[in-house]
Length: 165
Length: 157
Image 1 (cartoon, one colour):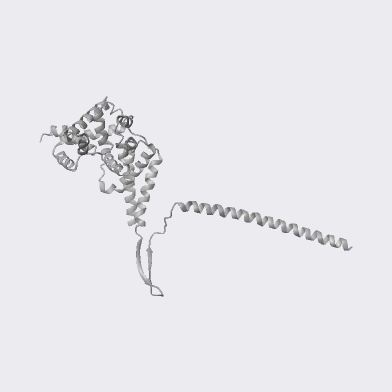
Image 2 (cartoon, rainbow over the protein chains, first blue to last red):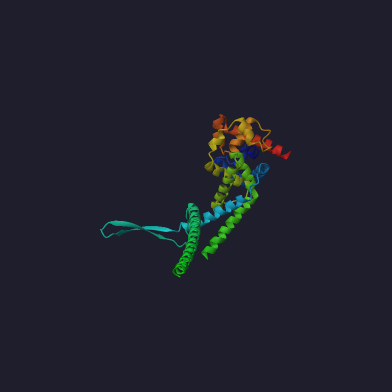
């Protein structure tokens, strides 16, 4: 095989850009090991492609890496959740009817819940605070009214004794 | 003990992905942006691709090269992106828009631009392009090579 012709055929470019067929790729991998010229041409092509990509690069914002890191951590945690073994065991009820129970066996002490629960919990918390404020307000109001009533009662008593005199 | 080993493995994987990210993220974002023409969407795909890199980190045998990452990203983008939406824009205007940021492609002919774009951005095989353009595979490969030579020259200048 004429190596020069092979290099000039454009197969190397097709491979580097990922559009070579499986057979072409295998042939190229084989020939690359045999002929340093092919290896060198391939290396130079890769360098050129990288240089071209560099000229069109866009710096990603700093938070992109944190998103990736976060997603990878989530993916790593997932196999632990997959350790949950779910088994179904048929049991007999009083009436003789079979009922299926699902036993969930997990070693993890954590639980994953839907994100929607965050807002529900926040709403419950805020409503709790509102009810507490109302309760305090009505308690104070009630205490004030009671004090006023006791004052009025004592005034009434005083008036009664004065009238009797 | 097992947990410690797993933690160390995760740390190693994360460090490996970080190294690839530091070296190639900007290039990859530029590449994805040229494909989808939407900065926010391109960033989302960038995150997805690096997560996939992490998933297949042990199986892929990463050599850390840009070309390997770019080929991997292209195959993943074929799955994520509705490429038909973008390949249908195969007119001159779309090609100009796509390459407007790159000085490399300015001197290519319409056919060279088209073939390069189909291969580089949309992962079309030489065989598929030869059917589309009704030309032999050899001539498509030759045109691709010429396009490359022109771009290489314009990059050197």
